[in-house]
Image (cartoon, rainbow, N blue to C red; front, side, top):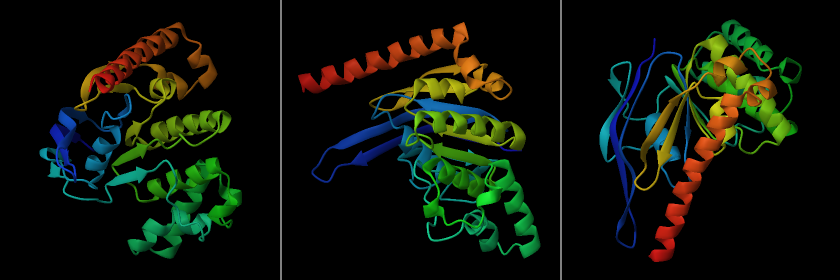
Length: 267
């Protein structure tokens, strides 16, 4: 069981030359076990700042993050992170990258091998386990990053634009893999993206954030992630409700961007 509570979170960055930027203000979210939440918003709305606070990389100015009743005060194995670039050990083999976490925990070799082989099967990389990471395509590297994250058996998986650098076809395949892993593992997942379409596909909950200061503007409960876990993603995208939500949210974010530009021009 995992319960993640983000309670009245605010983050203010002091600037070297004076002044400050209020990146987040009074953000409150609650996630139960196995929920999949995508976070979307215009540039500068604090999406990555929010994720870094939940990961424990940043300490908030005020508010708190608790996981299973325990305050988050720094990085921890119960929270796994998948970055836009895999942050892998490129000189190591695929097998050694995925097994790094279990090795650091002192796990028995036979148990580690079993976990690694299983996860490489799940992400479709069993035949590449002895390859060095630098020999793999970008999509394959992100598969390794997902498997490495899962090898640590975190309660919560945090994804910061994990598919943003991939070409369109590979990105769609990886979106399907994320949904497959979500359903098979039952992990709680928070995914940051700039793509409205991806946020709709990969969020049974979708949070739209508004800038500055970054705050929750609107939240949706959506059926498309459940649909995409069992149906072809292209069929899901053709659903009339999908198209309607996409246009609604695109217009919402466009209006925010226009407002930001207006402020900048008036400054």
